[in-house]
Length: 203
Image (tube, rainbow, N blue to C red):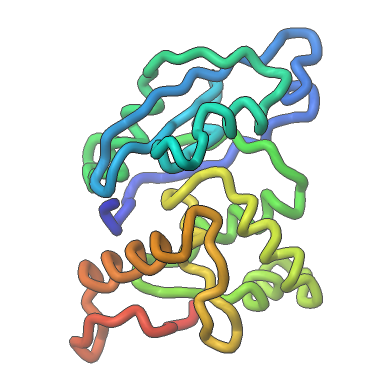
């Protein structure tokens, strides 16, 4: 994955009625896109990207998509939103002016995911810091759960969150992938002292 995403990423909450298919059943299109680091599964509704995850079969990507959205019609078809996400992951944000994410989650989870979008490339933050920024200073553990439930790999950068003691913490898609992302971002982001390192620089 390329470390820098310059386009505007906005979050559109998915309503309970949309998720449940009340009135009109939600249609989700998915495709596999080849990006640096391998294939990813990208899924979207008419409003935006709803899931982005590793495409390797060991992660059971299609089964995971169906489990996330049990009331939706799931169709294998590439659409423009998928190509936008792939361009971003290839470092071609010049081809994308805006990307919309259509996310299903609780208000608390959405607050956490929006905060993740504010973490600059080359920096990390902590679960406690996020809890404080969203006005829930005693909710570091629930923040950790919300971070781990993030459905949009890399573009919503949950890999930039570490523990307050400096330990990496977990990562839904394997800690080795988290380390790889942080290393890539460290290489592409000059530090003020000229040292390329992802040692915690808290945001």
